[in-house]
Image 1 (cartoon, rainbow, N blue to C red):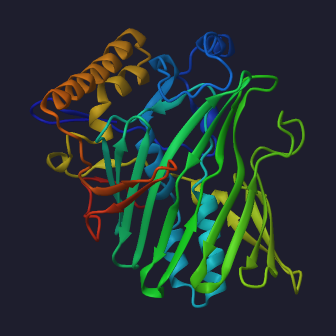
Image 2 (cartoon, helix red, strand yellow; image 1 turned 90 degrees about the vertical axis):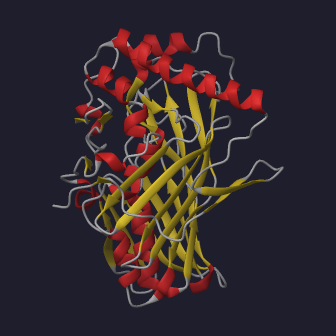
Length: 384
């Protein structure tokens, strides 16, 4: 979708990733494996890929900020409000676990989103749920998310840094940083992390979520442990979309529920006492008939909005005009280099607009939103 105003400013919004996203992509390069391996021929195993530049032939028409935002606003059923509406602490906690599983999206092998520029933003609303993201650091890449729903007294605060390393036959991206979900009227804060992203080239090409996710709420004395991905590193055993784990009491360590399933299908929950089995999560309810965001107020769109910053590149990729895509990507990057030189010449330090940021010596980033509530956005997700 392309939207224009009188001064020809363009916005490009592409459809959200779905469970069947892999089969829907038609802008990947031919001879994919050979082309990918050629990119890394001069990269040593163990190298940090923070400064690695990906040609537009290997991009798909979204920024990382848009992908992060989609995990919380591109959803068919309103799972977040269910978390707050549940009457008891166990039901609220299991609802949060189900919502956390819903944030997993199927990565697409062979293509990746754009690395956001410093100060890039993404602002979208879904009904009363308003989401705002900002790229608060470029090197290293750190993104912040603030989302609020005043009607349901819900707040999300994320601050995450992606650290990618090349391992010869694979690339592993560690997603550092905490994610907080606050049920304000309940006085409960749920802290959680993200699994890592593993891209394998050989022997079986694919992209997988792998690792352990922990979801913790001290106020109700509950914690969940979710293991994502196969047990075998080369992926010959198990399913790369599997989820196994448990929910237990923090104080006693007593297991309340056992979890098992696949995040792209269903995840079941078995009561450790009664052995009753229920469906905790159903991906079809979450991913079916996802709507592409639309521009509701073009004049209200910031110049830093992802859909505006990368519009020329996104349009070129969707048209498979790779020469134009290369020019568009170079233009964005050169503008950023000019702005950096200008700040350096003036002795200025860039400061985020929407977050207060702290950085610890051990490499941890933390952020606090500068506003209590995220305002309604000029880009909205249509409600079915």
